Length: 409
Image 1 (spheres, one colour):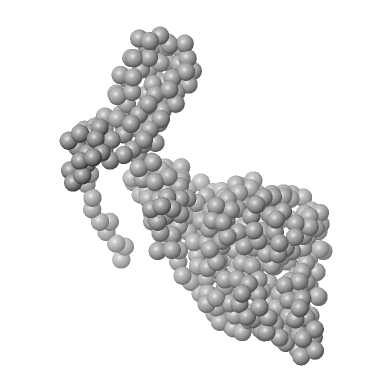
Image 2 (spheres, helix red, strand yellow):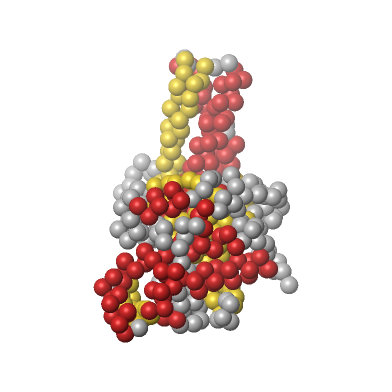
């Protein structure tokens, strides 16, 4: 994804730090605002992964730090739940003025509660998704239960949340008590998706049940079995982003647009340093993610470049065999092509003992053919496999012309 560092002001004139994530063609079909969990920041790995899942599907995603958190200005101890809702309004107004009104809001933990509280204020907002969110803001008191008496008596206390120390004032607790979400959920103008893990030890699954029961239709629930509250497993967070994108498709407008802002067939983009080798690939209207395995320093979010190469050969092989069988009236029911890429010594492809010699690429291809075929037909299919266009490309000289794109002035 393309990440742009931006800032905007909240209602108290504090500058809030944000990142705007854009899809590979930099032309999102819809905008989404992401609200992170209580005391977290926009740079939490789970937040980045969820944003990746959404941008992979063409969304533009704004993730920002609430007042006093991360890189945003302000004093966290002077904030409260109401001020976080106000920050959401400021984020919405920024996207609306600079681009177009966000149609989707996503919130994690208390961020999801804040999103639900704020949603009715945005008439152009069409869908809301919560992840591990409490049904009431006051649920946050459970995180600071042991310090409640000190806060009540002294007016404030330093508490440890998620291994970090924060000053919490009595006004924060008072504000939690006066904000009730239940009535807001009775407003039926937004589609709501509730995502929650049954194993969430921070915000129990009962909170998801309360939200779902109180919400009006259209509403949906998805269980995140095995995930923890912070979605520290990268695959869990990516899954959440992709599921939200797929769910939102029923409720949002998707304007027609050109598939690529380039006259080339394929567009590939490598993101920020934090993304390591994770690469977005767009081929016409189709999109996928490529990566390196963890053993090679990647996140294993998608196939490697050589995986894609062998997949190209395999798909072309299978399609070529299908076309040939149909044309010749051969009863070919199914084709499975097994492929493996490896480096072998050029002088002896069957020997791995000759160290120091030049190596060549070898792709092993095994055809598994189902159907009523004679031995002669099977042998002919093996010959036809070598005639697939990708096979021919790989086995003859290929000219690759590289040049730099002229920068826009």
